[in-house]
Amino acid sequence: MTDARFQDGDEDPLRLVARDGEDLKVISLLVQDAVLPVTELKFDARRRRFAMLLNRFRWEDRAEAELVGRAYERVRSVLVIEDVRKVQSFGFDRGQKDLVLSLLSMSFEPGEDGSGRLTLVLAGDGAIALDVEALEVRLDDVTRPYRAPSGKVPRHD
Image 1: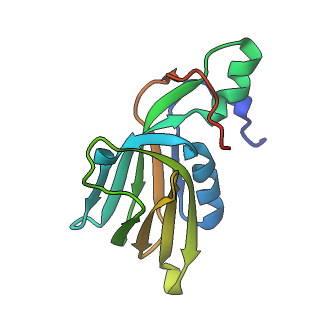
Image 2 (image 1 turned 90 degrees about the vertical axis):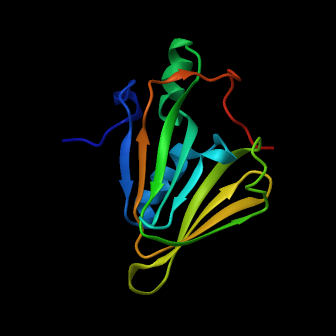
C-alpha cells in the first residue's frame, strides 16, 4: 500500500476530518484562499457547531490542470467545527451582509484536557477564534468542481 498522491484525485469529493494539529494542517492547506459571503457563517450554540459554506480553490487539482491545460477549479465545501464553546470574530463586521471573506489559514492552540482555541485567519487582518472542547474539524465537498471565475491561481502579495 502506498500513500495517496495528488495525481490519484479526480472529481471525487473530499471528505476529511481533523482531530489533531497534523490533520488540521492538511485541511488548512486545502481551504487556503476559500471565499465565502459573511452570511454563510453559522453558529448553532445548542449543538455547539460552527459551520461555513465556502468556495474552495481545488489545490489538489492544480498540477493536473496545468499539465493538461485545463482551467483551474473551485468547489463548494462545508467546513464544520464541532464541540464549540465560544465564537469570537475580529477585524470585520458580521452585520455587513454583502461582505465577502477569504480564508487564509487555520491553526490550533491546545489547552488543557484536549480543549483549545482554533483560529481561522482571514484576509484583511480578520480572524475567527473558536474555543473548543476538543478539536474536530470536518471538510466535505458538496458540489461538483466548477471553473474558477478568475481563471487564476490565488496569489498573495
